[in-house]
Amino acid sequence: MSARAISVLVLVVALVGLLAWGLAARSPDALAIGEPVGEEGEPGGPPLPLLADAADGVAEPRTASLSDFEGKWVLVNVWASWCDPCIDEAPDLERFYRQNRSQDFEVVGIDTKDASGDGMEFAEEFDLTYPLLHDGGGTFADDVLKTTGVPENFLLDPQGNLVTYVRGPVDTAFLDDQIKPLIRGSS
Image (cartoon, rainbow, N blue to C red; front, side, top):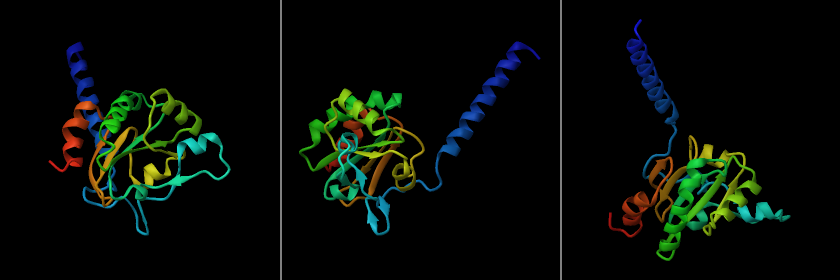
């Protein structure tokens, strides 16, 4: 076989592998647009520890769930401190939060599959001021949000229903062009 034929074969195998991975990564149980987030009897999912309390080692840490934010648009950002794309999107999410938080809008970060101390260091490094919850074992992200990795972002309407989601990082252009019109009611 010629070098060119081998190169073409390798490229085809790589593309088929990438396609297969993409299909496998799409969970058949993924949340559907318009579906309420959470489980029956637990809208918004179970309470999770607030990251600051978890890191401070408070004996009875405060908890929160997504249902605590009902009545607001909520952009749920699932992240981890070890995730390079999460590092890239963190400044954009914080900027967007600071610009839009007074408009019945909240960003809620969920640190998943991560040590709480690492999550707190990440939050401090990027000066994150929006609420941060800790899902150390990933149960909430995997079972309730049906994530396949990090980062993932979910926009919930004021009733707690899924409006849109992005598997992968978001950036300023996406937030301004896709999320801002929805939360302002001009989509």
